Image 1 (tube, helix red, strand yellow):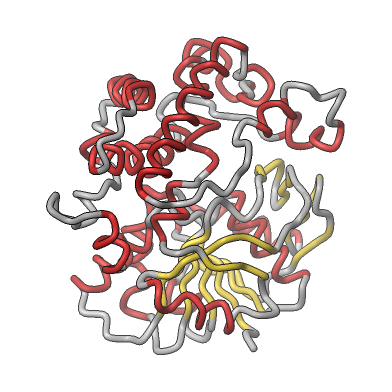
Image 2: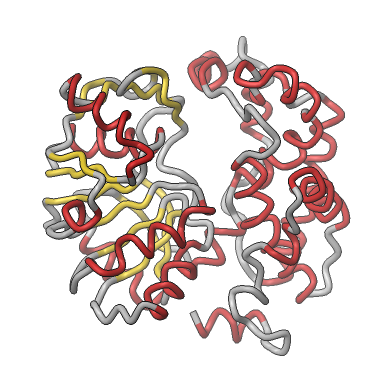
Length: 356
C-alpha cells in the first residue's frame, strides 16, 4: 500500500494534486526548482493549499522543498505534473536519486516516458523503476491566488494509463490501488493520440491569436474561442484524427470529442460547467503550452502515424505549420513523432506496438 507520494510541479496541477492527495491522507511532498520558491513559501506561510471550485478543502503537504533528493528519497509514487517541455529537465533532476521500486506517473503523459527513459539511460540509472503515463490531465485547474487553486471539474480518480514498456502497466495499477482507480491503455501511444486537448486547443488558439495578443491574461479560450467558423476547423481535425486511429488500430475513447465544446458554448444549458467556463482562463500568449504541448506532442504524433498509414491530415498539418511559424518551431518534424521516438520508417504500427 502506497503511503508516501512526491508531487513534482510548482504550477496549478502540481499544487492541486499535492492538496488532493494530502486531503486523502497520504504523506505528500511537493517539489520543484528554485523558480517556484516564492510559491512554496506561500504554502508554508498559509499552512496548506486551498482548493476552490469543483473540489474544495485544504491540503497540507508534509514537506515543500526545492531539493530533489529530499523530495523523492522515500516516495513510493512520484507524480510528475509539468509541461512537456520540462520532462527532460525533471528527469535529469531526479535521475541521481531514484531508487528500486518507485513508480513515476507522468500526468498528462504526452509521451514523456520516452524522454525520461532516454535521460535515465544516458545518465546510467540502474534503479528498477516504472514509467507510466496518464491520458489527459489530473483535472482542469488554475492558480487563483496565493497557495490557492480553482478546480474546474469534479474530482475523478478514474482514467486511462499505460507504462513504458506496456508489460509494466498491470503491475503499476495493482500497486496504485487505493491511490487512483485507473484502467489500462494498450500502450502509451494510445493515450497520447486520444488526448482531448489536441482537438480543443490547436485550431482555436491559432484562430484566436489577435484576441490573445490584445487581451493577454484576460483572454479565455472557453468563453471566446469557439466561434462557429473555428468549430468547423476543429471538426475537421477531429475527423482526421479518427481516420488515423482507425487506420492504425487504436480506439477512440471519446464517443464525441466535440461534446465539451458544445457544453462551454451553451452555459445556460450546462450550468454544471460554470466554474470551468468562468475560471479556466488562457492562453495569455501564442508562445504557450496550448500550442507547444498539443502541437508538439499529440499533433505531431497524429501526422506521423497518418503518414505511416497513408492517411492524409491536411487541416491538422496546416495548423501545425501555422502555429510553428508563429512560434518559430517545427512542430511536425521536431515534435514527439514516430521518427523522433526512435521508430524507423520500415516499422509497421503493429511492430511498434509490440516493441513498447
